[in-house]
Length: 297
Image (cartoon, rainbow, N blue to C red):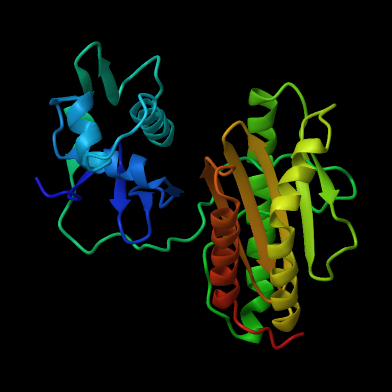
């Protein structure tokens, strides 16, 4: 079986960019090097039990690794594929033997062009949580658009408002069902940047110690991004919340004509601050470069 010719629970590997793409929704998730290699090995042997030793040899290329390395990579994969260690629907642990990828979740890809390595941001990936009165509402991600003629611009504005209203209603219903407490957005580094606004998403009673530490890791990158946003006449709003080893990070870039939104879920983000900054800067610049200059400014 070719290394990348099947989907696992509708997720397919994009080796060039180091992410997995959902073939139905277009959502993308960035995985670490070893979880990505592990998924590639497992999907070559659907339904087969692979021993710990065999997996470690192929994923880490016979290098010495700790006893927890494989277990951590399996856990990261299960989380990304909507599986968990209790149910084990997709990746099962075989005691004293190894792991097996359930064959029914590994389906051949239909022949055709490879998935777009840069899909638009998912329309509804995570709920946009209620913000404090002083914080602007994070709008729904929209599909990338090319600039339209001036006479049709008002129609597009009406359509965007309608979509935003529907999205807000859906998010409100979701929050009512899934959250007992309200999450609020508290602005970080207020009045520091001319073209950036940064918000930490907090639960009631949660202190700012952790969000402030996260900001300190990224503030040099924010200074560079603010300078570039000013040069391009763009505004950027950033929302983030850390949960254990995952950083949920969303940013919105806009001008008077259009906007771009990207939602990221960054695992093990504390392990390498330089790599984290590089990722944030590169993804933000990529979206900035997609923005056409607005003639109305």
